[in-house]
Image (cartoon, rainbow, N blue to C red; front, side, top):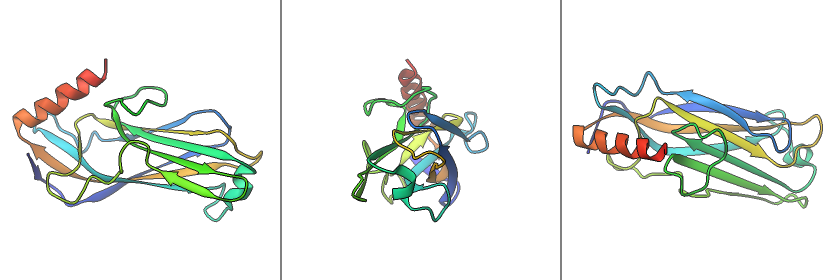
Length: 175
């Protein structure tokens, strides 16, 4: 299905939330990696999420001050808001639940966020950007929640039929 053009590399983006309940967003530009004319796509192998407080060494108990939920998503279309799990544009998502007793539970909502190690394993992205969103429901005043998103990917060339199928699916997901 795909011919690898590069080895795996990592794209990163950091989102910082300072206001509870306000969505924070960022864009990972893929214009240098995706080329429609050459049927070149980005193959996402895995997505990792790292949650930190105001500084890299901040205690999350200080950051949240109580029960909190952190929701982060990566999509290949700009929806402008968080999306449901059945949205075809959803590439990856993460949810962290933190309780006032100091217990944390981090889950992948939809995908295992690890697409495997085989040559054809992965999520193929033919759009020119990945859109990242972060929503936190509880942040102590003067604190911040930082989520670093690490996308492990490679560049591949797809057959014409495969590229068209992925492009059509992506366009259909836009509706």
